[in-house]
Length: 465
Image (tube, rainbow, N blue to C red; front, side):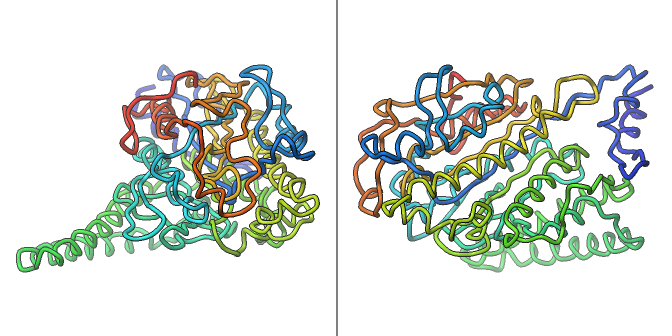
């Protein structure tokens, strides 16, 4: 079997018993081939707003409801917030002492925009973002899949500057709209195109060619300000052109069908548990079918009410955002910790699902070949420092798990920013040294196979990952 026939077989579809998946995921079709299929390397980032609970050691709540573990790199002890991840202990890594230097003085209501970019978006004034980690990988891996990336959030859309409702930003720093309706996401991934899709695509391509030719002819007649506006416009047109080229490539490729047993496509955040699990299931199916190798899911935007505020109903609590403001009330730390625990529980469920799914070519399981990241751009109340981050998987491309990794200096007992219950805390001076989170991003990109030696202006990869 030659390379071409292997490529063709990869994109065929096997149907039966309600399941039809793209062939890379069936070992039957790899058997007898002289060309070994490379196991996909996948990346997913889950973002939750509003940070985590960090009570002071002197507070009775510290023992059970402080987010960060206690202990050393290998002998760490999980509190009640993260003990739901104990069954996955050997598959996870917990990080402390990392943050984006450009955001350390930004209020927690304005910091989600830079979580995956590290850009100097600031807390006010002119706004400019840069490419996000997921899209840096999507540029590399997107050519192998129907969808370069899957961008999801509870609120959907893009939001506004410093109020992003998406984690994902393209090479020009423009936000990529997130999808938030399960049915919409499922249809995008798995519904067949209409029979006149090719004709529509051809018309769109012709219209774009004419549009680009006409607008470029104007450039020499424009002022510098208008030329900048035109450049921004053509960048957007170019994005569309790239998408059309990709659509043409995949037009004649069968859309994979998947088992929808665990999907509830009509649910919304009012049905918090069902919604949460369905969104994770959609990521799982997108990876399983190799429809994409890159995904982001933002559980909510910072600073404000919205659909995401309903997710805490899953554990019988009031609005999610209000939990961070009520930690000084009776059971306040426990309530916030209970919601953080639920977030960790659902992330763990997703990771376990990947772990239980073997790769068809025998190269471990899906979790071994997926780097799954779960975190926030705040630790304590609105404090853009010491991001609480968990990763799972990535064993087959060099990540050693079962560890609690502390970076920087001065926060050996995880009390930096602890006990903050008002805005006075984020304005204060934090007496610790942290490392740039961008250096973890460099390590992630390198191990995913991307040639990268810097990210967001910071060179070098973290050691000990």
